[in-house]
Structures are given as C-alpha cells and as structure tokens.
Length: 383
Image 1 (cartoon, rainbow, N blue to C red):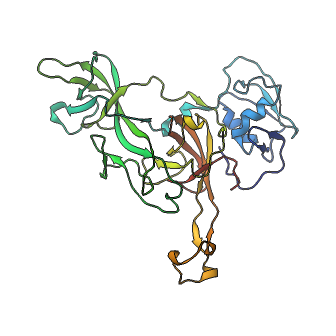
Image 2 (image 1 turned 135 degrees about the vertical axis):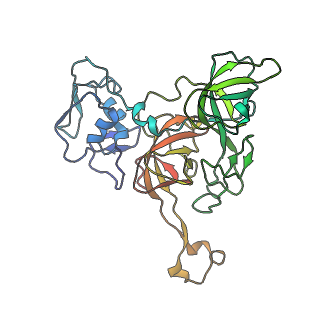
Image 3 (image 1 turned 30 degrees about the horizontal axis):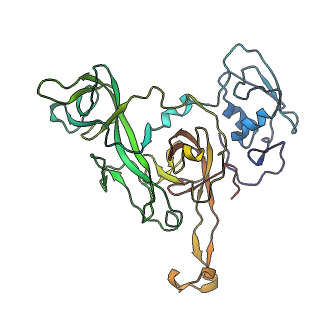
C-alpha cells in the first residue's frame, strides 16, 4: 500500500529523469524476491520501494526487464545492490502479474460519468401502477426511446450534479462558500434535500465542466410504443438504487472501467489551483481511504487512468497576532500583517475513470481526511 511522503529522500539508487525524483529502497529489504502467483506490480513495488508509483520508470531502465507490464510468477528480482535492480527470468507457464486489478478496487468504485449535456436523453416519465419509485422486477415507462427494440438493455442514470471550475482566489480553504448545485428530477439546479454529493464552489461560478450522471440500475426494453401509448416499457432487472420520474437512459457500457491500472505520476505539473478535489462521493465534504473523489482535471489535461496524485489542505492565510495584537480585524490589517501558512499533506489517490474535463479517483491512503477544495500535486511533492 502507498506510504505517506514525509521527508525529502536523499539516498537513492536510480534517478528517474521523467519524474525528476529518485526512488529509494525500503529498509530491511531482502536480497532477492521471487514473484508469486497473485502478486501485482503495485504490491511488489510497495514491498521494496518507498514510492511504488515509480515502478515503470525503474524497471524500464533495466535491460533485463524487456517489458515492465510483463513480470511473471517465478521471476527473481535482485535487490542486492542499491545501484541496480536485476531480474532473473523464471518459467513462462502462467499469466504475467498486473498493476492494480479491477477486482481489488471495484467494490469501492461508483458508476459515475460526466457529460456536457443530458436533456436530450430518453427519460422515465412514469412507473408501474403509478408508483413513486420503481425497483427490480418492475416496469418503468420511458419517453423518447426512439426505435428501441425488445431485448435492448439500457442503464438508468440520474443527473446529480453540475461541476464548475474552481477559482483558487475565491474558493474553499480561503473563502469557504458552500453552494451545493444538486439537480432535481428534471435536471435543473436545486437546493433539494436528496443530496448524494456536496462540494464548495466560488461565489461566482466558473465555466461549466460537465454534468455528473450517477448510474442507478440496468433494465431491458420489453416493448416499444403500442396502442394508445407513445412510451416504451423497460423492465428493471438489476439490483440497484430505486428509479424515479425524470431519470435518464443511456446505452449499457460493456466495460466502463479498465481491467487493471498501472500507477504513474502526472504527465505534467499543473499550475497551483488548477487541480483540486471537486467532490466526495456519498459524503458531505470529507473522505478517507477507499472513498471516491471527483477531480477538476481530465483527459484534456493529460490525466489518464492510473495517474497518482497527492492531496493537500491549502494553507490558511492568518493575521500575525504577535505582530499586530488581538484587537485588529482582517479589514484593518495590511498585506505585511498576514502570513500564508504551508499546505498540509493529506494522502494519495489513484485515478480510475477519466472524462475530458473531470476525472474520478480512489483515495488509497491518508494521514488526514481528504476534503473538497484540497490541492492536487505530484505524489512526491515535499510541500
């Protein structure tokens, strides 16, 4: 598992130019390690590296390892010398080990997606026996499902949030203005009580990043418009959240997640305030290990699945009371009377699903909770 970075590492065995940092072996490591069935690259790297997200660069730098994505059970990794990592190939009778298998993280993931628009999608206009809610085994009646044929499967999704860019000068730790932009059953912004996410936004919202669609369940079309009715019938046939009027339909994704994730640092350094935590799934504002968080950067920013970030509480701006005393208020002091406190490390997170402007990540470890508005940095950032 990931280890928090508390100090700058100096005793290094290999310089990784692409990351601009050096990897260091864990203390007390054995001279060799034999890869076993069930191992993952993340697990192996975590056993002998203090920064396991650097395993691709380390192993690619060694000619003995032709492909760092193809490490096999029986391979012997030599750790005897700090200036090299050698490997003796073993038999090739089993499948190679992988990064982080989907099976290890899937129970914690949320089936969420981000779209630029959703009001054109087919929507639930009513439910069997005029119910308020529908569940597995019941019928939902759908408007706008043009050309649907019996047997076709659709995911039922609910527009839940509108994401906006965060202005670092007006947001979060410095000027906390809580503006939940939940969406009602029509997909319009509301201040309703049925809130799955909660997050901070600046007083003046930035550009729209997209709308979040939360998958509720899956259903199968049983018939199209017939007789006096101009709606299609959908049988809810998967256990999930209850369906209500206004929920939308999208085609089922055969494989919404990658089957495995190969952790790596961000491809670029973001300007301070660009990459932040937008929201925490199923929480008000705070998350911990195995919670899902939404990030304000996506594929257009070079973020892909497996990208590792560290999250940081943004340092507060405080009045220097030793200098000015206890009676002065914020509007009566000058810039020379205030100090910016340092950012505080919270934990590490790994991106598992990426859209153009927003991505979702899983918190892997933390020494303090990860909150909305926290800054995202390189996983090795010392401050």
